Each structure stands twice: as C-alpha cells, then as structure tokens.
Length: 344
Ligand code: PLP
Ligand code: COI
Image 1 (cartoon, rainbow, N blue to C red):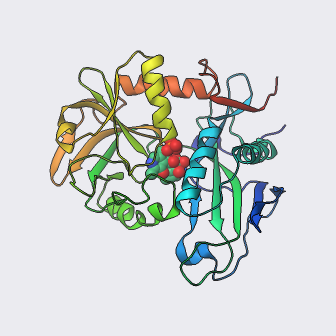
Image 2: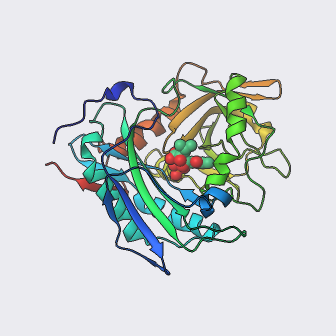
Image 3: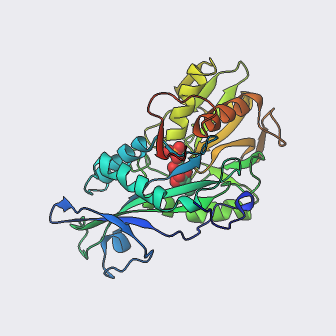
C-alpha cells in the first residue's frame, strides 16, 4: 500500500482530511448497522440538541506503525468504556464496546495510507464522537444520536515537541466538584477556550486547573493529566473525582510500577508541594508525555530541577517505555495492543 505524500516529520497537531470515516445512527431505541462513508460533512436540524445544549462527548486515541510494520491501536477498549461513561453522564445511549472497536478498526484500515511510517514521530489520531442529533427546544435529551469516527495524521501536540512547557495556575475553574470533569463532554472543552487563549496571550503553554472548592490541589490541564516525580524517585499523580481518568496516565502508573520498579502514588497533590518535586509532566493521547519545566502560581515561579532544556531522567524512562510498547519495541502487557493491519 502506498503512503500519502505527506511531510510526516513536520506535521503539527491539526486536521488533515482523510478518505473514510465511520457513521452509525441511533433511532427508535437501537443502533443501526453503521459503516464507512466518504463525506466528512454533516447536515442536521438547526435545533439539534448538540447545537443548542452541547449534548456531545468524544474520545481520542492513536494508531501507530510498529517497528515490524504492523498498524496497531493502543488500548482502544479503554476508550470504548470511557465513551460509555461519558454517554451515561449526558443521557445518551451507550455504544457497545464491540461496535466501537469495529468502527475504529474499519477507519484505520480504510485510511492505512495516512498512518505515518514507523520512526517518523507522527501517528494517526482517531476521534470517535457521539452527539444528539434531532431537534429539541425544551431542555431535554435528544432521541436520535449519531456516532462517528474520523482520523487525521498528527505530529506533536505542543509546538516545541518535547521541550519543557511553562504552565500557569489558573484562576478559572474547569469542572465543578460534582460536575462533568470526569467525563469527556464537549462542554468541558468549550469552557476552556477563553482561558487557553488568555494563557497563550500571556506567554504560557497551558493552564493548571486546581480544585474549585479549596483552590489548593492540582487537578489537570485542559487536555492532559499531570504526573510528578518526587526527589526520592516516586511517581505521584493527582487523585480527584473531577479530572478525566486518562488512559495514558493509568498506563504510565502500571509501567512505572511493573516495568521500572518505581513506587507509584495516586493521591491529592497540593500546590504547596510543587516546589519540592523533581520532575513534572503532562500526559495524554495527544500530549503523550510532555515535560513541564516551570509552573507559575500568581507571581511565584516554580522551576523544576529538570530544567527547560530536556525531560527529566524518570520522565524520559517513562516516555521511552510507553512509546516502546506502543511502537512494538517493548513487549506490551496482555491486551494493550490491538493489531489492525498485519503486513507481515
Ligand atoms: N485530561 C483531559 C481533560 C483530556 O482531554 C485528555 C485527553 O484525552 C486527557 C486528560 C488524557 O487522557 P488520555 O490519556 O486517555 O488521552
Ligand atoms: C486527547 O489527548 O486525545 C485529547 O482529547 C486532548 C485534546 C485536547 C486534543
């Protein structure tokens, strides 16, 4: 199969239209068969629930070319389950896990020419999403839904690649204590747009959201969870009911413990502790692991000892092990890698 003529090494994190996407509809209480289509445009009522009341949730996962030329996805079953959690949180019908996996497989296989080659540093980003499609004017859930998956080849989420980031502690809250922070609802991202534009204008790469109730604990950024490494080499990650349970973060906790022999703590992380950390990073599908070099808390600059030039040594080991598993250089735990195209 010939690859598309794309400058893989210089791809940013943007939308490139690909050939095929998957569509499946929910009507009269049931999902239809679903299948691939060519058209990336959507037509719907001006009064669609998604347009009026933001009844939509989404997922993000990647397909990779492995060292031995296979095309694989990483833990797609976890995305399928999280989409079900999000759907329940927004009163939407759950998509069966098998249907989700089948949709992702079909989209990757049909767009194999867009899967970046091994070693290019790029990957194929998949965006499954679910939305309420029929017209509703009173505030209530839709009765008709569409589930779609499209894909786009991407490079690094942050412009500098793996250059350490500068983060500011945000004054704006991302999610209320008993709200929607733990699901991947579009509304959580809509609220973050003004704040990310403001952060960029002020020279920061991202916002660090804190718990709205006490404003003393680290939550996450607009699109990634945090990891920290303590001076005695422990991996620490914030525990909160209002952050998205990152699949990357959960995988890193396993990798840290079982591959690298590190002690791992998922617990409340106080802003006061940040000055004592050795390393910090953001983790997520898009972010992979992006090191943090500096955190600014209202004038107080916390410079991580790992500096502004490169990842800290523990973060680097985590990065190498995780990406090694994803690219087939390191043996994966059972069930983590799903082979979609086996070119052997
Ligand atoms: N937190 C938020 C708010 C996100 O949008 C994402 C991205 O999906 C993550 C964390 C990372 O989650 P994952 O590792 O499952 O991609
Ligand atoms: C992902 O990492 O897949 C996300 O959904 C984050 C988004 C901000 C791009």
